[in-house]
Image 1 (cartoon, one colour):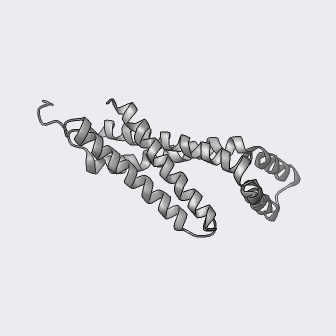
Image 2 (cartoon, helix red, strand yellow):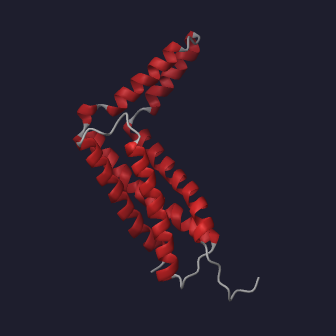
Image 3 (cartoon, one colour):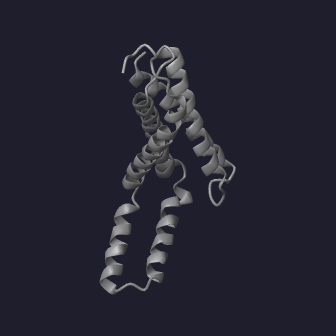
Length: 172
């Protein structure tokens, strides 16, 4: 199995696990205000990336993987899990939990923070217009996907230091 298909499969599994955690947290009312979802999500992403890279190295790549290949694989896993999570976010915010109004409450906090800064009228209006553009479902999903992929890339950089195994038969 090539690395793209491997990362798609394991990225989908990681994404579904993240969706399951988000759904459980929402259904139990633990989705806001606590650090539990943050720690659980990041722990699962770190574990998922590390497990998948080690599994690919040992099962599919004859026990060797370079640093760059490891980073590439980990970032791909994060990207594909981000796509699953983005789909869940869209469905949740559009159909399942529109009554929770998560975007509206975050937007209200941002507007209040800008109004408390005592900016000039033109700057304040420009900032408020920017907030109106940013806090839409489309941008929320795009930024979430990019942020999840970037975090996965950073985790992959760190994880790859520990899991890389160079081929001893290669002559430098």
